Image (cartoon, helix red, strand yellow):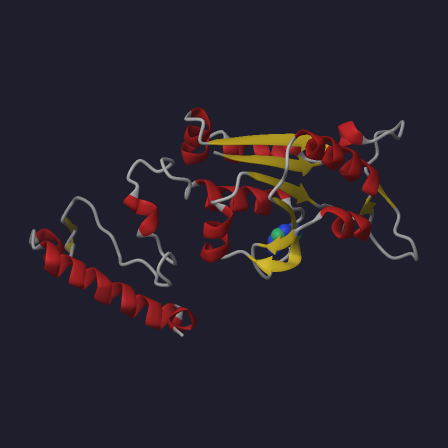
Length: 225
Ligand code: ADE
């Protein structure tokens, strides 16, 4: 069971990703808990504002420390966190190895930033890990947070119905996946490779490995280094 506590100014952005499919089922099965907190509820300001102008000038607003600090301190008083992760394009890029590692912890807090950034003191005081989902800039940390949660939750034993299917994922062994097919065997003359219809399991496995290797060499040679 992994518990996620996600702090955001846009809780609505996180509703749908967790309400469907595997993430939804994992919560119903009690294999994960995902809690979302609206930072506005932790502002003492009478306008419930969560951001302010940057010291020193410059464009964009900066998220204030107070709502983060109050919410984080409250949660930390309730349980111990293995990780407090800040989603940011200047963090370490998420990969399957990191997802594997994080799937073995108990309590993960995720901070979502917005606007021009968050007060550096939040990062200095609370964050154990800064993570990016890739070299591009999104409008906020919510979609990256949902991606991180998805990548972790599907690795929790019992979440996927076929336990082996996460093990055979692309990247799990530093290789991409072989192509897959389903019925019909012939779609307007476009045929499924004969080998897959042969019933010869060892030959099929061999073919899959070769295909995976070819694909990895062509698309992601860096994985084979
Ligand atoms: N926030 C904005 N862009 C991001 C990214 N690429 N990864 C993580 N958090 C982000």
